[in-house]
Image (cartoon, rainbow, N blue to C red; front, side):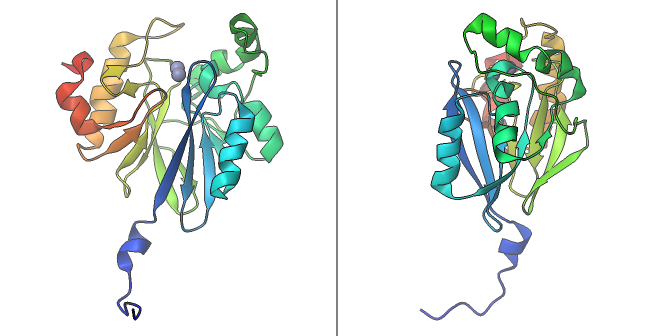
Length: 225
Ligand SMILES: [Zn+2]
Ligand SMILES: [Zn+2]
């Protein structure tokens, strides 16, 4: 078949994103390998642990990891970040500074839970509401979504109608707020004021279990009635 002579504007306007989920740690946290198809540059979001599994996934899809992003400071999300940063030589972005108290006690927390490899970590860049992070041609807006933890953030790519929400929102559920400095009312406000308004058509991946869409959660999530 002859190649289509028309310029493919859409592919330039909507650079494609690809995602591979790697469940890690005893908490089966969804470590997310996300990359830009155009450049093959990738980010590892929430490398909580089980680094060999993450590195196998990176090798399998043949991408170049250039960054690590953290949605929040809990051990299942951040416990492996320091070691992965060392192994890959890439910077860590996020979460919001409100989770410093979690990030500087990861090794202690790990000893209590039998996750001996967890290490304390300080990110190269704290993130705040309105900041941007980018991987290849994909630009994500940072949303500060406290409640599950004070420093939780979500990443939103407007062009792809796609978000990574950490433990703020799940399919049919919401994040725990019984952990240190959790706040139920604040979490509900974060979801209703920042995540749902991104749009019904926005799909998301989250820290545990299957992803969903804002539309589905708006109408059926029992915690948001
Ligand atoms: Zn968490
Ligand atoms: Zn989690």
